Length: 327
Figure 1: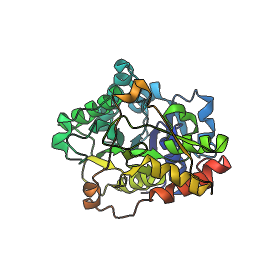
Figure 2: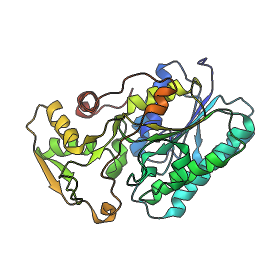
Figure 3: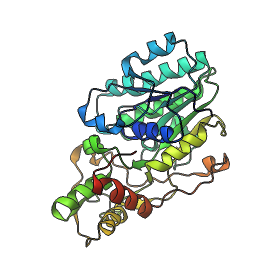
């Protein structure tokens, strides 16, 4: 790709979107169109130092794309309402489902390649496994409205006869890394563990309310944000077939492993306290996720992913402990 290409990034002030903007800058791409609402002060530092061409408010993006005469070379749709505790489906339908449909239709009409973020939340409690086979997507049963909104778009996309010239949906598993400072409750367990340990020497994890799992034995596929960026950059070269792909490490790890890795990085003794899972998420809690990654590998992606220990060591040691942002 020429670095003169114009790339649109939605959710650009957020966690993954801002990291993507920095990453593209590092690769020589400065013709970036950053899309977000840009109203939150706590997201400002995420974009410090980013070279870009234009900022567009998310509510004005469709109009801008339809009236802008210059060729758009790629849209990376990383923006969404990502709160898994949001119960108002109309909010999620507007921001996650309808908004993405509009972008899809514009990309189709204007022949713009599109990569968009789906989610492992679409898999629910995993009755059908975690394999990214597109024929099972209509049968998936997400556990919360956020997961429903993401799955509804995946279903819709697969039904469309008219498509962008190149499109990829990525089911992100549990992403962690720099620039998630603003996410509050929705930030990664690593972020919360670091802050808890720094404050009082303890890490607090949810107690298991499932007899099949020990306290701290809940398993998730944790993926470092830098692996997300590498995969997206690789996909932008259009080396994979259109479709929906998992994006995790392919290796589930326990929350106890994760918390222990934070203590080890800080060179502190492990001290974990278990607390009840909040009532509002207890019945909708995923106890196990693990990405089946053969589809992406078969498409040609062969780079190794950060192990949990490698990712935590870098994130905690180079970013959280120094109050640094992705740059």
